[in-house]
Image 1: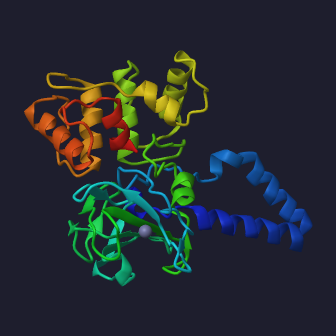
Image 2: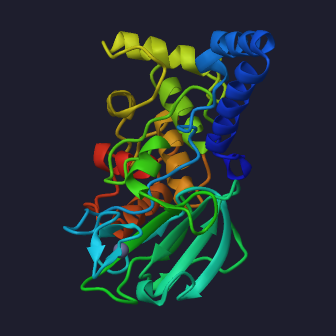
Length: 318
Ligand SMILES: [Zn+2]
């Protein structure tokens, strides 16, 4: 499960310092170790674009809502994402609901949720109008945890989103933090690298099947799946690197609507389930799936037509 996976970044950093120590302290052995690591290079270094992270909310970045913005002499600790009260707020990654309540991080941001993701990493969601998880519960990446609102100090409804590394005092810019993990906080397509795992990889695998290549749906973006994606990229004239990024997603998704059946419907159902739809993955786009799609569109302030087209796809897998 991606829930329990460390994000790899501090492991990578430890790796770097180990290598530096090795090459400094014992040149011969250090050089050998460094050489071996370089030889396996990209294959062994864990990418942070591992499928474990999701966009927490649909909306736009308001003027002055960026990280570090001057808030009366205090730098803004998060990134604001503006939308209407009641817009769904999702867990940016799997983990546990460390604190849920009023002023759990600061009273200024009202009703908030702190999620703990392991590896001294936390995310924070402020100004909520409603909680959909309770303190201490475990959450999966993309799970619906609360609703956007106006609690705390606000001029209008928005999500105040923070990302913390190295403990709760280690606040970092959420836009770059999420970008490094393949998520566009502004709402674009995600980037998924070889070695990724989880439900978003199952979505990719179902979509590749829909395109005519047989694949086991195991949620593991390993060599067989990467090879299938590379073939797809080649057939579409895309850059062939095996990364499922914006251009590949745009070509890979397939519109699913009432009456559709097949692997693209299973892909859509799997993606809806990442966002707490609770559907059976049966490949049948019947009334239950139409209803789930309409609900998702409604709480994300998208056009509500029950059709899983490009805009809905982007919000689902982003
Ligand atoms: Zn804010």
